[in-house]
Amino acid sequence: MTTRRSFLQQLSMGLAVPALSSPLNTLHTPKNEIDFSLEGDDFWDSVRDTFPLTKDRVYLNNGTFGPSPKPVSDALMNSMEKTNTTGEYGHTQKAREQLADFTGVDSSEISLTHNTTEGINIMTWGIPLEEEDEVIISLHEHVGNALPWLNRAKLHNIKLKPFEPADTQEANLEGLKALITPKTRVIALPHITCTTGLLFPIREVVELAKKHNIYTAIDGAHGPGTLDLDLKELGCDFYAGCCHKWMLGPAGSGFLYVKRELLDTLQAYHVGGYSDTGWDLYSDPPHLDGYVPTAHRYDYGTQSSPMYEAVRAAAAYHTSIGKEKIEKRVRELNQYLYDGLSELSSSLDILTPEESASRICMVTFKPHQWDYKKFAQTVSKEGYRIRIVPESNLDAIRISTHIYNSKEELDQFLHTVKSLI
Ligand SMILES: Cc1ncc(COP(=O)(O)O)c(C=O)c1O
Image (cartoon, rainbow, N blue to C red; front, side, top):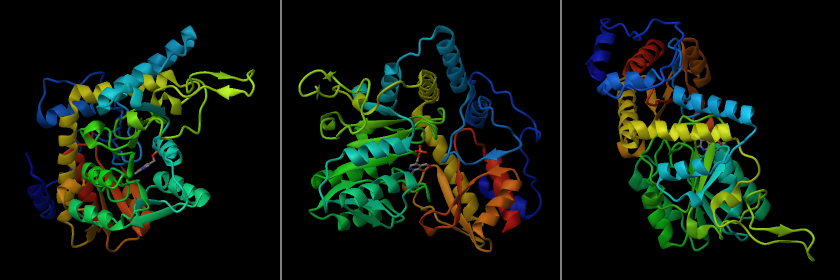
């Protein structure tokens, strides 16, 4: 096997021609199943074969949206057909159970949402806060975590205390400690930032928060499907997860975890069918008995059965490969890309932390001689789907890699970067 270092050495000598394993411009008909008899890169090639991703474009933007493999899109289509042929629009309890299993919690602690931002809004508004209470966030928030907290700060006069994330877990914990005051009520951090892909040490953050009676409300957009996630082990109070990024479920699917003992603390502000234990408009005065004793109180009304059947299929797809195996592969590809970009460090700056515990699935860099948007446009014309990072004044390029990506694709990408900078 060509190692990362030797491959780039050969490239610089003009000896290696990066090529994808299949001819360019071929449409790919995805396979129904992974071949579990295979090992190593052959196994991951078989995983890739279950995705409809075309081979003329290298998809490196899973941090924004994760394409679904065939078993997931089949589940969506089949359920859609069933719903339309029978008129039975179905229930979502099985999805709650499967998501609970997938994240190591109880199904009564799972609310179904349509994206991470919805879960974040439920946490942000539901946590009891008084004027002048303090909430710690980072300066590297996605709009989906920044805006709900900014909005609550604006409307309820609470105080946000944003901090600049550091490059190591230890420094981040020290930074957090320094910000805590007797008025701190919430630490509202992302598990993994959208900017540099920094992985915060949430378990340790939770331990720190507990000592000071502080709630932990985690933006988990990038946690499920990358990490071998166990929310009980993580220990946080609330976790807004996403199913349409790294879990590879359909767009518009997510979940919110609420620790069981906090169900009556996190106020349900949006309610409707299935949220309540009874209500009566004829009584005097009209009254609402209360909320169901589960996190179902936060979601209400008709839900999309096809969507959540696909979420179940996505969880099953991950479990069939093994969450631990997926985390290992995601870390391996991340390291491969990180090492490759490091070899080009005379012409670009890597903004993602070097400490391997502080990153997992994304690498962000900034070419020295380029305007980042122009660079992104040029790379895009070469056949790569990447993301720019204007957030936090970084003006950089973000590369996400998931289980369907290959080292060949990363070599090809590194070759392109090298030829441009
Ligand atoms: C860290 C982070 N938080 C929140 C979001 C918002 O996610 P969603 O579109 O699922 O609401 C994103 C989206 O990329 C993100 O990267």
